[in-house]
Figure 1 (cartoon, one colour):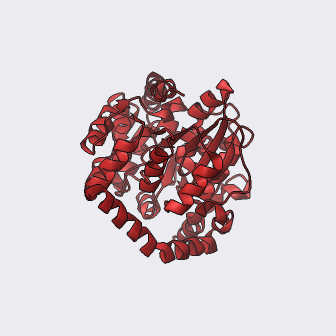
Figure 2 (cartoon, helix red, strand yellow; figure 1 turned 90 degrees about the horizontal axis):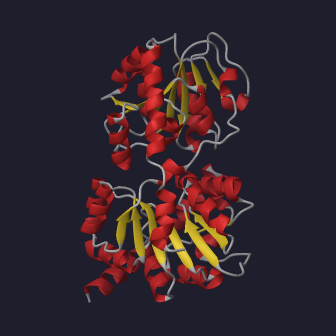
Amino acid sequence: MEQPLSRFLYNLLLWALFPFVIFRLVNRGRKQKAYLSHVPERFGHYDFALEGKVVWLHAVSVGEMRAASPLVDALIERGDCTLLITCMTPTGRETGEKLYGEKAKICYLPYDYPFAVNRFLDHFRPSAGLIMETELWFNLIRLCKKKNVPLFLVNARLSEKSLKRYLKFEKLARSALSDLSGIAAQTEQDEERLKLLGAKRIDACGNLKFDVSPPEDIPDFRQFFDERPVFLAASTREGEEEIILDAFEKREDILLVIVPRHPQRFLEIEKLLKAKNLDYVKRSENRKISGKTRVFLGDSLGEMHAYYKACDCTYIGGSLLPFGGQNLIEAASLGKPAFLGPHTYNFEEAARLAIEEGAALRVDDAEELALEALKLLNDPRRLAKMGKAGLAFAAQNRGAANRILELVGI
């Protein structure tokens, strides 16, 4: 009775939160109008159908959508299926349309209400499903098993922080993991933590993000800059921009490029730059900086590779403050030395290996970040050595896509 009871309580909570779900969707739509598009899909209603064998891949947002590209390419190359890719955010959908619009159909995965999930599965009738990273939707997993849809968790990761959260409703998590057809974990540490939650059919296959090759036609953003060294603060999170600006306040010999993680914060960062009376240029202005420009604000989507290519070294956002850190693999794959703050639990193994291989450096705070960045930028030999280490680090960890496809047997 314990597991059915836990599911009953989960669904009871979902229905209790239903008004909040609608309010949150509308409220987000006020800030980002795209949230109000395709709303019926979030409840299992779709205006298109698919024929033949349908393989379904779920990538919640931008990062997962980009990381999925090696799997998408491998599935497309086989040519024996129609590929359906689902997501949860407008930016994820936009990224999916841009990357895979001609190769696959993109839509929203419905909220985890049984009626909506049933509609989704009955409408598309997927022959198999792959869920990127650790998206445990309990009704989705249960109904896939009930309808004999093999469902796999791929590129799965589970930090210590997430493990503690899932252990608060351990019986429900154990039931969900046992209903999966298989799990491809990123690292052996992820594998062990998932086993503590009851995962059985599991293997460590590596991180798919290592398999994502940089585009061949990366725009040249260096044309916008002057001769100063360029330091990139990439995928920054709430509160990080201000402490980084304060730390680099007196570094007029360095051009600071800031690219916030979330596009809805572009205006917020612009207001911060104005409040600090800093001369800045925005990417959207598409113009060259002047000698007085202190900051280049990256207010664009889908151009992270271009920012990495144009910089001399970079800070990987979300790690100075306790957000868990963002992906450092893109920087390494372009040979850019990376600085990491103390909080990297989202990419724990990749961060550890990058530091060990000499591709990244750990700092404790923004002041140390500015100090160490200045030292590195004034040492061309060390800068080049770290860049080469990053390229080697990225190359030697590839191969996850093939291992995942072998595991799932698609």
